Image 1 (cartoon, one colour):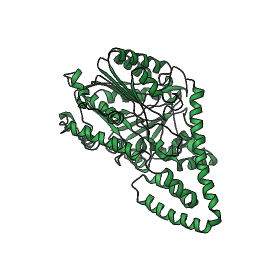
Image 2 (cartoon, rainbow, N blue to C red):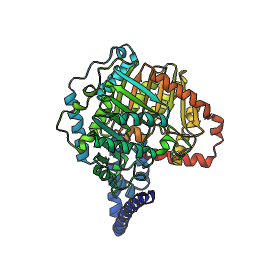
Image 3 (tube, one colour):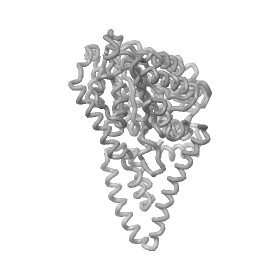
Image 4 (tube, helix red, strand yellow):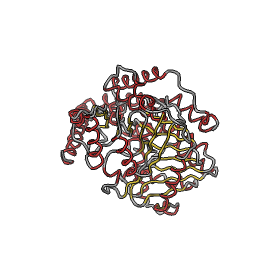
Length: 508
């Protein structure tokens, strides 16, 4: 099915939503004969809504985004807030996912003791304890890891491992698009189904709305692949479309796991140039550390299909092991919008606040909240070498404009910012002091840190942090360093535009 038809799906959904907004506006307009009473009721409603927003635990920037339109347009602002601002995932969806999480915790029992190497590392121990207590993610030193500095390397290794699968394959990706990458993987998955391998696949319906035909999950199920679309798109006004499954996970036979920033589409392996050369990254885990990625996959999968058997039949030791100790400690972890714990941001803040020598961050988007700006600027002002790498060629011009709106304040604090001139950076990496690194799906923006289901791997000691650092420094050779002088030359009109866009940054 061609892209033209897939694009029509989005157009029809947009039309349906605009019609719903129009009906709301018309309904309000019809009350104009009772305008005084209606306006008074809406004003009173706005007061209660504002009090609720102020006392909410959400991010201040997200509050401001709603407070301003409510104050300017109390009739429309408060009604649209009540319609759109509530948690978009249905109660059944949330309840089921949380019950699944409790089931996994119950079956896991008492968490294993953290590796001794982690206890001997103050920051590693601090992050390890935090992730174990708040993300139910256990540390492992019996895991071999490999860092991929490009989507091409990631794809080559993934295809080889998928081809060797003997028992099960679990995959969960945000974007899937027909082409060389996905078609190659799909043929392997179909072949594995014929061989008796249990193949399961999850994709995000919103993420793939322009790349896959409607009800593509049914098409895969006909081929024997157990498949579901996460949070399917429907032509209804709902903030629920903010909650997307942004994870990238592949697990083979329980003891091999992949994650990173790479989706299953051809631009990620540079088969064609969508936004110039595509710079991405990923990691491969082999050993006990793969269990955390399996657990994240199952936490979503068990919403769609209940599992009667013990989930530990998918553990790393059933078909692999025993494993020798790796050269460091790894912790795969996830983040979810279903609770108030911002795991992704908290790991970043731990690393930034305790860095002693340097912090190198690679991210496609730089839409920061106050906590992150304060941490980064304080680190730079304290003598830490803070460097950020972002795209020069954007995939979304308005998001890139908001990212650049932060440059001046960060540069003034001594932070060095680079843009990748060959094209688009999609990698989500952070490396600190040659000892710590994170690689995963988590962007430095509100969506990743507050609204999406995400995943990443934290590395303490070992070779992987050094590999992430090497990749960063080698990539600098094709980057342009931003300067404060450049930012001072930005026109007043452009600055105004960026300021307006920044107001709506929490929705970008």
